Image (cartoon, rainbow, N blue to C red):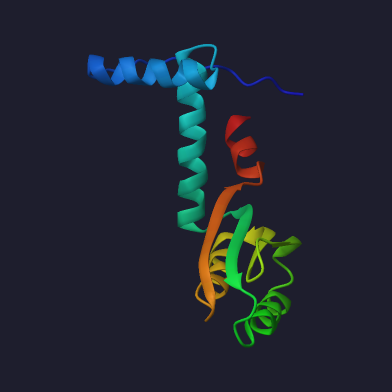
Amino acid sequence: MKVDRLSRFSLSMPANLVRQFDAMAQEKGFANRSQAVAELVRSALVEHHAQVGLHDIAGTVTLVYDHHKRNIQGLLTDIQHEHGNWIISTLHVHLDHHHCMEVMAVRGPAAQVKAMADQLITAKGVKHGKLTVTTTGEELDKHEH
């Protein structure tokens, strides 16, 4: 296994921003500023890769809907079957007598996954939906070695 070399660089920021950053890093349990900054950079890269659409992404699509709405379950199932290549797993939860939550683990090309998520989220009868994106890890590994 190849060990990644470290690169040093300096940052200049307003003192108040540094104090807030240090407090956040401590609250989150980072051992030092370098770890905290590296995590922020990784998060920004994941978001960038998802926006650019050149890499595979992983994530979840979360939907909340009233299962009594006419045809909602059939519509959501049809959309999921159309895009089965990108859905790894689903979880269906009954929140109360009327409301269900569905969480889909997804993975695939960013543009296709986002288009599928948009189709699910905007389906008539969905009260709330959200695509949460993370990385498959592959594109970050390519840059580290």
